[in-house]
Length: 225
Image (cartoon, rainbow, N blue to C red; front, side):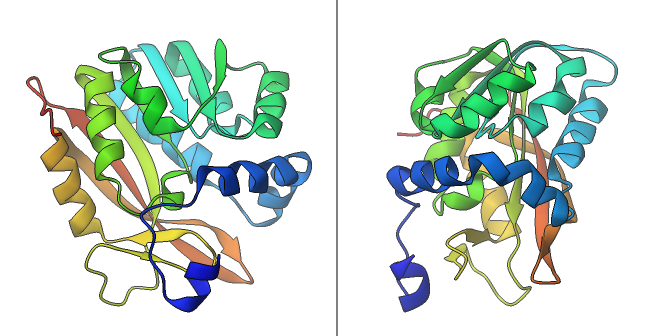
């Protein structure tokens, strides 16, 4: 937060900060987001349904699952669903929702690195905006996906001015350039299927502009170091 208000740009938010923030937020999380017109879970699930074309993914992981809002919408489209989050408080709420087959408290890049070629589908809604440099995440996601598997995720788009790569905002979240993100995906072996502009929610009576990405792991993939 100090960096956000004084011009610093760490590559990501400290996982301890994210965990503590969402532990404190867990009890009122769903109610608060409903008041902000939060719509990302439905948007992500809609893109998943579109890309699966009536099929069900065999193995899926919801990265940064929070209280399970995305998982609830994903459940009809997957056979086996894992929820991953840093916050124990959020995972308690997700457990009560009953939409996951397994929940794991873990940093998402570490989780992906430990599950090579394990998933047909990865989703992440309003989680990657706590990470600036997404290249390690994309590399780990490509390795965790089976060939042809999909990664569907959201990012914040910032206020529309020139943004070369990513920027830490006063909110403590990052905004990302669509062009930079597409380049980083390609370098990881993730082929863009679609990019959509959207409104993620409202904050202070202002729309939060977002980007929704649908990507596919290429048959060969890449193994960047």
